[in-house]
Structures are given as structure tokens and as C-alpha cells.
Length: 566
Image (cartoon, rainbow, N blue to C red):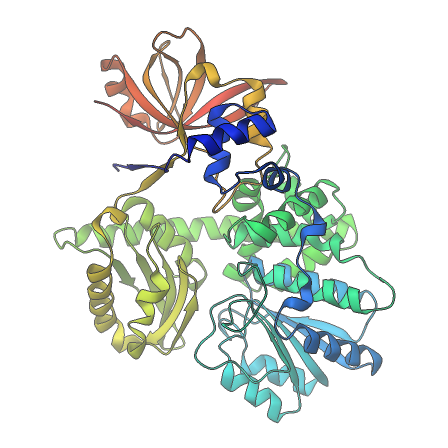
């Protein structure tokens, strides 16, 4: 698949030179730092040395004072509190954080995760009735609830109070809860709007700790859960999220949570955990619980207090993840075959529906389809006599808004710019396919239908040194809006023969013209370029720089993202 190279704007050179002088870095490094909006010594200090002192006051969030007051009243009156959360990674980490904190000193509490297949996403009537039948007078809902207007009214009628902690976009009407914590409310003055659901849960327990006379439990011990949610829910790693992610990774290094220790071991992760390691090693295993059966097992693992208990739950999740892989691979093959059958029809979107597809993996399948056919994609299956599924988007296109334009055909929907969930009558699927295609076709620029590589800066090979990499490494944690820098180098040639690994990857050594220094390179999925590389004297590469460790030896390696030939 051809890729479009988008070169980021070059910052003002005077600003770059002044920054380089003040923090003592090279011009290429100064350029990529300035591209991230960091132009002064103080801004660089805050970026490279995140501080917990720079977290915002949780009481700046609309409704926080009411939420904390209601929870403390529940503590004082020995009320039963139900901590309620979604079944994905953000939801289960949110529940483990909030329940783990509250239950450590208020034992009249339980947690509840809805069944994906029996109850669906978010607040459910069944969950509210469970609370009513078991004497719960307060429900704290995490990573869900912002659109559950009628269900919150139903809970109110039963005498159950709700506190909603959500980070999704609100609808026209906000639920009538005791407190709604969501920075995306138009009238919420909280300075940072991009917290994960677990991040909002953390702000709640931080506020409770601030309000109580003594800190019974340190809320910062729960930052390992927050960073897992930040990585898994693909929120921007900027501002407050960067601070939370930075200290969350440090908390993970302390290895104080048996469940995560077991999961890291079973995932075979031997290196220091990064955002990428969480996304590909930890998150799928936690998610597998809710995808294949019930997400309660994920929370049980995160809350496990002994090594034996932790391994018991982690091994179950590992087995479910293996099953998930089999299922999503099979359905992906079916979906790709359906797309290729319709290859004669030119479309700018993909909407597929099949009744027997597994509801738990449709989001993964949508992402897999985009890897092969780069366009906004929705995968639907049958559940409770409805069509339900997940949407995924391409970079730069707001799939949530596109779905919103089709809301007259839907029962309900929710989500973000790049990922959403939706449910509609099965009879409406053909009309929805047609209308969604019309909306996408009329709003998406053609260039967004070509995969994009964001190039940070041009770099000569002689600039790539251990010290250069050391500064790059200090820019972590990497993630959305602070991605690992991508460089390009021109006039590159083969330094020796290349190899094909596993029939699809390139392993090669490259050097630049007039520069004898060569670098080991890996090109994942680029084996089809072998003959062209061998036949072309010079080419240009886009790549990231990483440290490769093999048999105790550490060497700098270039991870090639794309190759262009003149």
C-alpha cells in the first residue's frame, strides 16, 4: 500500500537555535522538540522532567465537590457503594482503581461489570436492578454513563444515587445524577480535556484523599492502572496525561501489583515496559476477558493480592486471548473476502454485516480491514435481534461525526473521533451503508484515504549517535500527539546484502552517500521491496531510531517505516 509522506512544518529557526543553546541539544533535536510546542527552557524542563506538582486541582472539574461530598456521606453512613464500569481496558482499570481505593477502608462496597452479550455497553437496567435488590444506595459509574439519561432517571426512581465519571462526548441532555464528572461538558472549566476514563477515576480518588483528614491510601499507588488505560484507550499523551503516564510507568517498574506482574510474565515481556508494550502485550490480554466471556476476570486479576491468585486469573486471561486471536483471524479473513468480492464498486467507506460474527472482536476486525483497505470501516454483527458493532477511522477523519449524521437510522451510538460503537435495527443496515457512504464521500478529502507517515525532520546518518538517542529516549512516554519521531534520510544505499525474515520482513544494513557509517535496519512487512532495493543505487527512507538488544549487546537500529524510489 502506497504511503503519503507528510513533512511537519519546520519551526522558526531563530526559536530552534535559541532552544538548542538553552538546553544544549543539536539542531535536529531542537527542531523536533520545538515541533511539539516546546520553545523555552522552562517548557523543556516541564516536558523532560514531568512533575506530579503540575497535576491540576481535581476540584476544578465540574461536579467534583458534589461527588466527593456524596461519597464521604456514604462512608459516614456505612452505605453500600457499587463501583460500575465498562468491560474494556479503560473500564476495568477504572473499576480496579476506584474499587481498590474505596474498599481498602470502606468494606461496604462491590464492583459490577456489565455482560457485553447480555447487557451491552454502559449502564444497564439489569445493573441498576442488581444494585436495588442488594441494597446499594450509591453507584459510581466509570468510563460510561454520560448518555444514560433515562436509566439514571430509573435509578433515581428506585432511590439510588449516581455519580458519573466519563470522558466520552455528552449528548444534548446530561443525566440527572448527583454529579457528572466529564471534562468534555461545555461548561466544565477543567483545564485538560483528554483524560481517560480511568484518569477521571484517579482525579476522583485524588479529590477524596485531599478532602479526608488523613490519607488512608495513597492514590498515586494506582497510577500503574492509569497508564494502562491511557495506552489502551489511545488518548493524547500530552499535558496531564503525560505526567500520569510517566509516573504510571515508574509505578509499573516497582512491580507492586501481583496481577500485572503475572500478566507481564505470561506476555513474555522482558524489557522495560513502554506505552507500546502495554498496547500490544498487556491491553489485548485484559480486553480478552470482556471480548470472549465476562470482564470480571480482568478486574479480579488487577485486584489480586497474592502471586498464586494473580497467576490463576492471568492464565485464564491468556487462554481467552489465544481464543480471541483465533476468532478475530477467522472473521478478518471473511471480512476481507467480502471487501474483495465488491472490489468493482469504488467506495470511500466499508460497512460489513454478518449475523454470526463474534461481537467481541468486531472492533479488532475493523482495524485489520483498514490495514488492507484504508478507509473508515464499520463491522456489524447480530445481537439481540439488532445489528451492533464497531467503527474505526483513518487518520484525520472524524468517524463519530459521520455516524452522528446517520443517527436517524440508529438506536444508539457513542465513542470518539477515531472509534465508536453503534446499534441499529437489522432492516436499517442497507440504508445505513448507503447513507454512511454518502456522508463519508462528501466530507473526506481524497488524501486522507492514503496512509500517512508524519515526518518530523531530515537527518543525516552522522547525526545518529548514542547521545542523540539518549535525548530521544527522554521524550518518552510516546503515544498520540507525542509519537516517536520519524526521520527521513536521502541518498541511502545498501551496505551489504539483505535478508528476508519470516517471508515478510527485511533485515539489512544501510549507509548514506559520502558517509561510511552504516546502520542495521529492520523493515517490518517490507519484503516486497527486496528486488527494487537491490536494483536501485540510491533511495530515501523514513524511519524511527531504537535500541536493539541481542545477547546482552545494545546497538542502535533503524526501524524503517517506508522507502521511496525516484
